Length: 106
Length: 120
Image 1 (tube, rainbow over the protein chains, first blue to last red):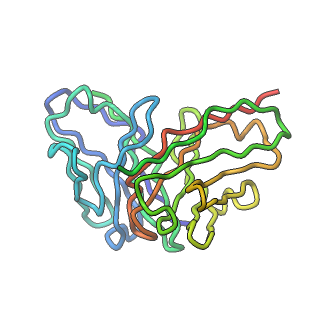
Image 2: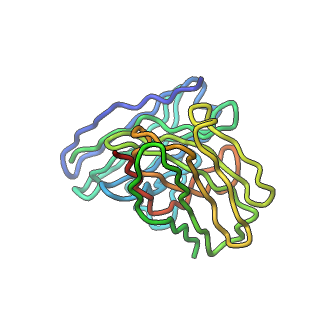
């Protein structure tokens, strides 16, 4: 079955750039979506179709893909960006699949 | 404005049945899929299944097939997730979420979550 691999944790200083990766076989052929989940809250879509931002999401959030890895980049990180981040694709059976999540510490 | 409003927290005993709900508004309920996602305490997001209320077409994750039932009542724009016999391991937060479409789309709207606690 298809697997999405994320690092369990990423730590970054305020004002710096955070990069959260999501690895998967042939991920380049799939649309990758990213969600932010703060403690006690429902997930929020922050990047869709690899690199598009929903309205209301700061331009500091961006997405990219290269090879078998998708990356969520958060520039000029703020304390308020501390959260868990999940990548998501639809697998070859047309079922949604989430990565294991990455805890971002600022 | 699209909204998904879920039913309140539940505390149940092992072996009991349960049905939680997710009411959609602000969009055409019958032409959008709704999925269910489990999140156990301190763990990640797990897709459970998805339903198309227009014709009740339903797909389940292999991990949840046979363990839960997903249904919808389009007359009241509400999707359901139910268990016939709860286990302690069903204790978790459950979210409903609406994808923009099917296959390749993001889940752009989420319910607030329903906490289910199963304990004797």
